Image (cartoon, rainbow, N blue to C red; front, side, top):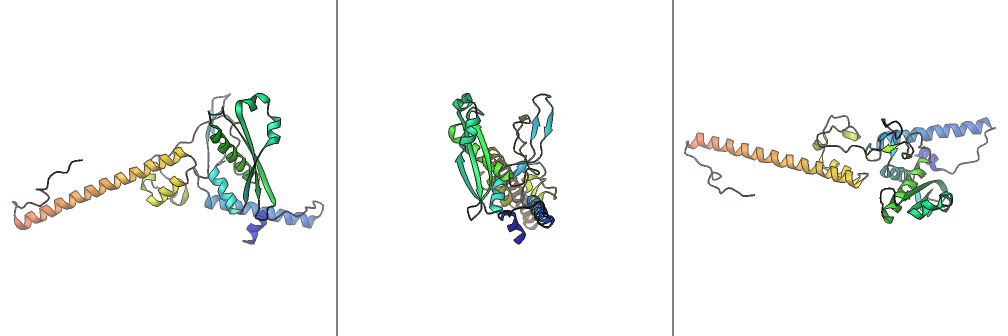
Length: 271
């Protein structure tokens, strides 16, 4: 626990000319990075907290897969882990560097500042979004801008060697493929059990839905849940039918072929 606190402790003055002091900081940095790697491996879930995006190079037309991209849910986990507070302010400095015609088209810039529980500065990140980017409304553009600024601030904590955010410069983004009911789960605690999404426990499917990175992903996970419920209903109906047939056969053997079950005379239910 003390080692984790070193991650967010206010840095002391580093004297690079003093071997002992420099070695101390090297050791702390090594511990810090190792702890973060372990946290990423144990706690972050691919496709929810981060994901690899298939992209298309605008010049060559070739597709490639990026290094892991940190999503909003993953950034929020790091903020919770380090007990940080978020603060958003309008990014006037960035606006001053943007051409006037872009500002007139509607561009929003925010800066996200991360502070520890004592209010001390830890990191900051910047984000921008244009209303014309995907015909966003002003409200949506503000949300996206703040999300980008927050992810950037988290990456600036020292996570840029594990994750990226700057996808726009790399080419045309293709949305990651959403899982289908019969796809094999490759992440989380069921990732090594060769299970289909539709075979996952319902409580875990609900957790995946509620923690989805996008509304589309949440809707897709709900469809998988509906598919599982349909399979369970059909399986129960088949079991009930088989049970009734076995009971009918058993009673006919005991009371004769003319035996009729009350179910036989029951009116057929209409949908």
